[in-house]
Image (tube, rainbow, N blue to C red):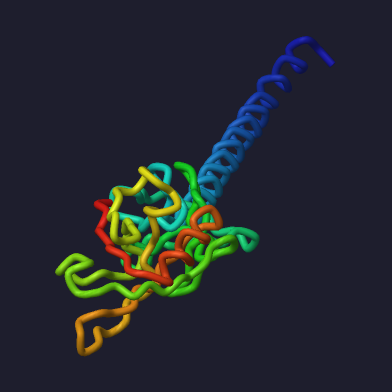
Length: 210
């Protein structure tokens, strides 16, 4: 074989090599496109699976009714081991109260809220008979915060824990012929004795601003 023949064979082999290289480049591009599509698809799926959930925007004390400023919404990927309140249930949560104090950032769950008219662990419901003129003219509502003061002194809350204490309203009965009605209040263990003592006599109830 002459040098000329060998050179001619190399020239004929070059196009095949270039063709193979183009195929490899094309395959690499196709693989890259497929990977991009897969990543985009996964991201879309994850976005579709997130649901709006309710989180506390600030600390909320025990038996303190939850208000609109207390809530913020986050996007959460559902987990079978995590129970939470969806943002769509916001109207149901407003006015409800936690059984224990909850810090800012807490993911709300139904179990952390006091059921209507039922005290949480460590709390008691005490019925207080309140006469006409010894309560606000506006109607009281469940979970409203009130100050209960034993008569005849009518002390402000915080001045004497035995005679004046904070409580949450659990329910309100219908007034009798004399205008008196029974207000069920939720109290913690610290104020349970004072509430029981108040139940045996006359009290005055004032509404506390949220």
